[in-house]
Image 1 (tube, rainbow, N blue to C red):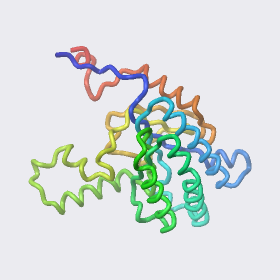
Image 2 (image 1 turned 45 degrees about the horizontal axis):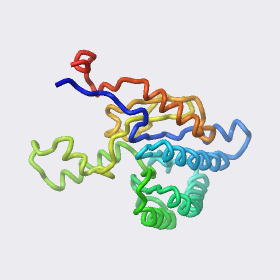
Image 3 (image 1 turned 90 degrees about the vertical axis):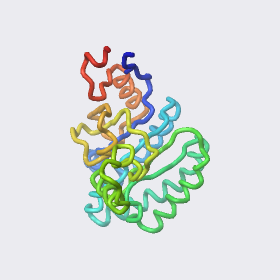
Length: 241
């Protein structure tokens, strides 16, 4: 029996590294927080379009574990902005059928931000449309290290630790691997994002900075994805068998 490597035009899971907020603001001689505010507007429009297109899961790299090293005033402003905007967006998310989830070292978030996040996750838990995953205080190496520590505490037999066993200890074991990873602002690196999950993910890089990334840019990325032939590590001969 041959391998069926056909893919639907719309990927099930899209992950986005939302880069360029600071440079977008700097180019306009604005403060960095203005760039983050504009970035939230982009999130709102992209989430709506993702749901309209039938994408099942959208994971956004919202705040990395390395971002804690930014100036404390910027970090505080980001946490406050996230809390205020997330609280405001809950009714819209519910109206669009969006279920919210989060991954990362969430216990490192300020307590008020944790409470808002937990409330939003709870209130949207019954939604059946798009699953929106926020990667907060997230690092791919941290996730792998934490999973390894949990496995060591279970003390399994070495032969028991296969990929399916390991995945049980990731931040969200139910999260499917991304089909498409989008990176904005033209940077050509992964930035410690979903390192375990993107082994065979298609990557799309655009020069557009995140605040300027809208529905049409998402559709363009998906059109590019739809024209590719996913290999999953196989050769052309194996794909044609």
